[in-house]
Length: 173
Image 1 (cartoon, rainbow, N blue to C red):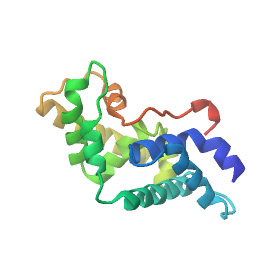
Image 2 (image 1 turned 180 degrees about the vertical axis):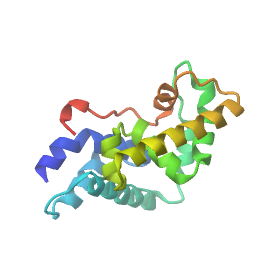
Image 3 (image 1 turned 60 degrees about the vertical axis):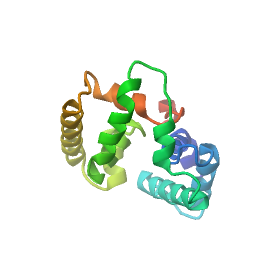
């Protein structure tokens, strides 16, 4: 699994951090993800994200009752020009159906491209593009109804992403 770890390390750290913000150290969770893949003969991006989901769920179970992820996100303060829109944007994002929310988070918080999202979701790229367009439209429409100015949805979603880690695109994913 050395190749997968080299290739996907920063992606996994980033994915673990925003999924379990302030629950567990993202680097520790990433180590657990790759340790769980060591027994697999070969792991694709979908296998990596399944392992991320498993490790994140385990981290939440270990702190159950102490603090929810929604509480952590509500308390998060990011200094920037979009600070007033943060709570509304998070609330609207969380109100989307799971499929819309997941595809937007893969695209904007995990920094996956449509081909990678298609791999993770085991679908084709055209379906991913359609779903991204639909989810983007739904989110934009709901944000505008709530009075949020949406000049650049990508920037808005990037600004509200929990955590500090970002995918290192030079790692060759």
